[in-house]
Structure formats: structure tokens, C-alpha cells
Length: 258
Length: 373
Image (cartoon, rainbow over all chains, first blue to last red; front, top):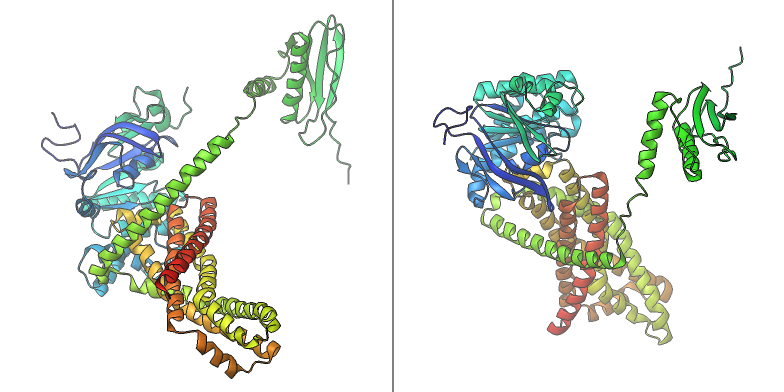
């Protein structure tokens, strides 16, 4: 089989989802979803509210088991693998949840240091220093000993990103990174995402319906639709604007469907 | 200051125009004001035409009124023409009639049989969830026992402080009053037989074997178990539990075990303290009501309460601590991701803990009886 156009011949995708059926509590939300993401790519999952974007993300990161199909990271199967294999793969990716999902009883430094404590032999002092470095990378120098409740929503997302980057993951997932942020903070978070990719070659997967972020960041995107329960378009955002599907055009040009 | 002009009230004019009747609406229409009265199509009319004239500000009350006119025409078999109404009003009227044609709201209540069936299945689901959770906690405890370095000792110590030392005032008050109540109740009977001194036996045995552990567990179920459910429920709603899972850190190991250990350790300590306070309450009543000297009370107490009685209370208290912790953590982790879900989880944690406490207490009573303790 030929490699997809976004992958070089012989290149192993950073993420491959094959024929995924996703759903909760007896309800099927997505069926037969197949896509792959090249290493170092910024990949967006877009679509209207309720189309299953976050559901897909939760299945990709292992919070829910797909009913059918499989997910692999850098060629290593993630679904239907044993606990040890899964834990090993979990170490290779980070997730930034919509509200940051920082542990409220821990300071920012302790939040970022916890993954290091779980997965590295570093001493307490070294973990603290590395956590401070990660926080500085996202512009939170001086806030290391603050609790999540003491900082703003945008700062919480930055701190969440620092935690997601704690183990220098190969893949970082973002769930609606711009949700609830003002345009300036949202833009600075976009810059940070690009900076992470450009600096570390990290593969980025973003679930969003923020048009400015999609056009500013995405190398490629897939669009989901509730009616089809799956992908209705895939490609670079600039190409998707000319999609034959009027729903895709309407979404990306922010016009009401005819 | 000039008078503010009073807007004209909603009005309906009914006029004959050839064979048909023209209904003209005007004025200001407000949903909070009483609508004009419409008595139905006049006799002899062959149709109705709807019009608007001098119409001021209007809201949903106007299309509602016009829909009523149309329904009356329809019932009388008369055509009703709305072509002369403003387009926006016409659209809204059509939309309202579509909604009204949709029928009554769906009845989502379950029949008695369905409700009984669902409740029965829920009991099985919940029993299985409790067993699964207990099993998961046991496995995590074994894993942590092999590498105790991974256990969050600092969190455990903080929880001990919260569920132990911070609970002392309420446990003190409740236990003292339980001792007082037991002594007063016992005094009524014992005085009739001249056995006043046995008040010490009654209060001592009741507190040490039963009431110390049970009352402490009830207090902690309401105080600490509910707090655990609320904390974990909020963490779930904020995706903090998901964040742990995506890091490969089992929430049971990180969040549940430190809390369970804290309660299992502090509950027996609190129960011993409750025993002492309860006995003190009994002693105060015995002295003030029955004029039994404290030394006599103490000597009599020592003749009946031995170490096995104290041990049985302590063993029960440790088990009750685990039950309260398990119920609180389980319900917190099961909470729905909403404020309402967290509230329900908190209530459910207390109810589950109390139910399991009573069952466990009964089982302990049978077990200790069999063992002769």
C-alpha cells in the first residue's frame, strides 16, 4: 500500500488510527475513523459542537477503549496492549485538557514534577529544578509555588502545557486550547504550541473549532460531522476551504450553511 | 418634567368586510399583560382576515393570540387569511403552529415495572462496582507494599490531620453526650432494682464495644466521607482524574489509598478517645444523678470491661474507617461531571457508608458472638 501523501515513503506515522469506532455507555459517536499524523506535524481535529472531537481525543489517549479498530504511536500498538506496554507509551505523550486539569492541592512546581517523580530516577531537588525550567519555558517563571486557584485561566493552561511537556513527549494532545481565553492569550498559546513543535519536533494534535488557530497553526486537519459520525474532509486548511462539501466550506469561512 | 406618553394597550378590532370578518390587531403587546378577549368568529362570517394596524412593540403574546384565532377559525371550518400581517409576524405564527402541532411533551417517566426493574439492576451494578473497587484497592495496596517509596506519605499525613485531629471537637461533643444519654436511660431502669452502681457497667460496655466505634464512624461518614466524595467528584469534573490516567498513574494509588490508610489509622484512635469521653459523660451523670463517687464508678467499670472488649471496638473502628473511606472515594470517582453530580455523589457517599456500617456492625456482632469475645 502506498504511504499517505503527508508521509514520506517508509515513514512511520507518529499516530495512526485505524477503523476506530468510538462511543460511551452504549451510544456510538464515531464509526470507522481512520487517519494518520506524520511526525512533527500540527494536526487539527475540527468540527461543530457535538460532532465527537473530544470523544475521539479521549479514545486516542486511552481514557476510553474504542469498540473497534486500533490506535498506534510510532508503530507501537496502544489499544489492546498490556498494562506495562501501555504505561510505557503513556510516557511518550502529554495531554493538555480544556481547563488545564492541574491538581488543585499541588503547587505548579509539584504539578509539573509529578510525572518526573513517576517516571524518572531524578532526585527531589532535580525534579524541582526541571519543573521550574518547564514552567519558565511556558512563561511562568516566578509562579512555581503558586497553587492553581491563585492564577488566571490562561496561566493554568500554560502550566498544564508545562506539565504535558514534563517528560519531553513525542506527541502532545490539546483539547480546545483556546476555550475560555481572550484573543490575545489565545494567540500567545498558539505561538507557544508552534514554538514547542519547532523547537522539539513534537507532534501536535489539537481538537478545536477556533478558526484563527486552525489557519495559523494547522499543517493538516480532519473535519468530523455528526450526521456521518466520522470524517467528512481531510487536508491542509487552505485546501479544505475549497472542499466540495458545503458544510466544510461553511465551517471554515464562518458562513451559515445554505 | 413632561409626562411620559402611555403606550396604547393591546387592542383587537373586529369589522365586517363583505362576507368575511377582519380581525385587526394593534397597540403594544406584552406577554406579562392580560391579552384582549376574543369571543370567536362572528356568526355568518365566511372567512377571517388577519391584519395589523398601529401596531407598537409586540412579543410572543401576539403570535400566541393570533394562533388562537386561527385555531378557532379552523374549528369552525372557516378559512383564515394572514397574508396582510407583517412578514416577521407571519413567520413567527407559522413557527408557533408547527411547534403546537408537535403535540404534548414526551412523557419520560418510567412505568412501575420498568422502575422496579431498573432499580433491581442498579443494585446489582452498584454491588459489583463496590466489589471491583475493593479489589482494585487491594491490588494497589499490594503493589504499594512492594514499593512503599511510591506511596504518598505526605498526603496521607495531611489526611490524618484532617480526619483525625480536626474531628476531635465534634467527636468529643457527640461521645460525651452519648455517654450522658446512656447513663440517664440506664438510670431509669437500674434505680428500680437498686442497682445504681451497674450504670458504670452499662455505659462502659456500651461505649467500648459498640457506641464509641459506631458514633465515631457516623460522624466521620458525614464529615470525612462526604468531603472525600466532594473532593474526588470535583477533581473528576475538572478532568484532574483524567490527567492522572493519561500519565499512567492509577487514581486509586494516588488519591484513594492515602485517604483509606489515614481513616483506617485514625478511626481506632478516635474511637478510643470517644470511649473515654463517653465514659466520662456516664461518670458525670452517675455522680450528679445517682451520687455514685467517681472512684466507685471506675472500680465497677474495671470489673466488667476488659481488654478484649476494647480490642473488639478498635477492630470494628478500623473496619469502619475503611468502609467510610471506600464509600467516599468510590462515590467521588463515580460522580458525574457536573455540580449536580458532585452533590449527588456526596449524598450517596454518606448513605452508602451508613448502610455498609450497619451491615458490618451486624456481621461483627455475629462474628464476636461465635468467637466468644
